[in-house]
Image 1 (tube, helix red, strand yellow):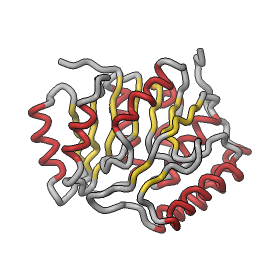
Image 2 (cartoon, helix red, strand yellow):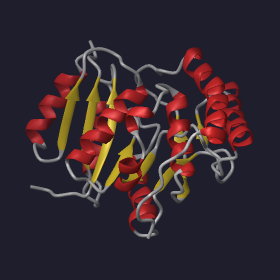
Image 3 (cartoon, one colour):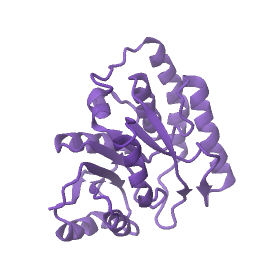
Image 4 (cartoon, one colour):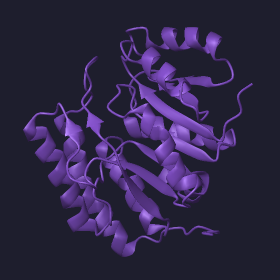
Length: 250
């Protein structure tokens, strides 16, 4: 048995080229992390690979299988609830495709566990633009989308669409997870915005984002559109919605 206070949530859909390597990379770290795969019925056999690896890592690797693609946001909400139910203190989001380096997990953990932040974000833009192998058009779209979110909402975060994060459990206990409405990139923005409006402390940890080499990106124009227009709804909520506050911020 390898006990851990940390669970890394990895949503998957058709990630057979990456899933075994990313799991093994996390499990080679000196800090012990557990992994929860949220598998959305991949027809390529991703779940079969995870099940085989569960035989090798029965106390560290877990999987929730869902029927079909239900959206990134619902996958993470499912994972958050699972992590809370299983008493993890630090709950992470990470992609399966190595765009987020497993080697950065301990740095996000340290920001929360050692420095006392409530949310640590693996940020592409807090120290310049740290993105590799993206076409310039996508870099500019992502960068200016984050600036747009900052301008509209006032949130003091430079990488508002980042999906590499560590939450302390009290953040996810405070937020009404069933009230999070967005499913795509806007989910990432809404979770950060809600965390900030609840009064939690956020730190951006600089990371280098590397575009996937294997498999197919799930990004599309409808997901990006949800993010752009969803921000206006968040601004409206910021004026009129009452946000919960942490019971203990010490």
